[in-house]
Image 1 (tube, rainbow, N blue to C red):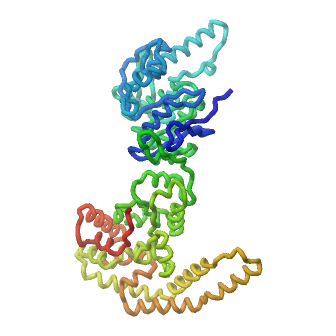
Image 2 (image 1 turned 135 degrees about the vertical axis):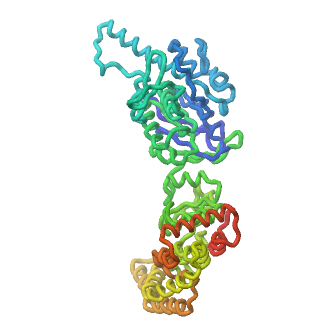
Length: 538
């Protein structure tokens, strides 16, 4: 009968009461430093579910081992690894004092030699079983001989580290690059040693064990993390794997794992939550939010777009790029709903992007702020930015021409912008069509027709055109930047100053990063801070 795939956790806020998770293959536990993850790992080790043992792999582990393997009888080698005490009378009662030195959360585990002794003892047992079966008349082929744990490790090693080979002999483990001479354990890299160690620990865990791995990412290159743990979980389908990690990328990549966030530990009880996908916030982003102790600021764009300006200008926030303005707004709204993310304060920052003041005020009430210019690119077009950029290449006389060019381009495009502003207002007003539960079908039709009649598209267009024409006639450059949506404008103005677009952006980001680091006063960084909205950090 297969062992149940359930796992007990302490019920949140009540250490003595267990909460059972069913149908578990693997679990990833994340949480900030001091949230009690290591102590929770110890609790899981001491409280395995029925019919399962536990085997915990500490983050505090020594990775050195002797060049020559010490041979031990199988049962003694197994007890030495699992309990830290390799005597016949050893049992789980010895584990805390011997394996963990009575300090289960901080003791440096130094069991690599015991692990290798057990691997070799298991291989000797496999060899002896094959010989016995041959002597009793059982015929064997190469394929019918079962793999030993060392054989399995070598196969996983060659899959995860294809440019290295693992060599075993009667008394030593060595590695070699393809086509090169082998070298012993003392010459292996940290990555090679930890990969060997983790493979061995997982394959030597008891049957049906709960394998608890603290910081599985340590010394493992990101390029091979997923392959390694996929291979180990595949090699031990009988086990339940529980990972405790700081690495949010690792947590996100374990796509089939259940995820748990440990919020706090008061010395006795844990407060934790199962992480499910929140509406509009994907799991990797949820993990990033949970891992932050700062308020969240959702912004438009991608992580490598111009919107990274905000990471320098809002150091008191965790800035997360969400793509479109609609995704920013939905994310802020989603985090305001009841749930495990609602305790994390979140704001949004979007481009002004032809919105009316009524719409901007409505969004601000929800915690969504707006950029003071039409789009983020226009921040690079501010007079102070252009002046500083021109001064850096001794082209100060070109600033006035660049500003005049921008205003003239806006005059040429007034009609296009009037149509775009009118469309935006129509869209906003249609969104204000309010539902009534008392409606019949006829009422709905009539109410919608009445609502549409209140939207005079022609009048909206004329109003917007007159407003924009007035902005152009006055020639106030800052007002132009509020309403002028033109992709590539910053690059055009940079060329007027004498920059190529890439050189201009390199100068811009280098300048604000340097000024922020040095705390410079009165420069580009301060100018941007003065025009952008102040967003709470509490």
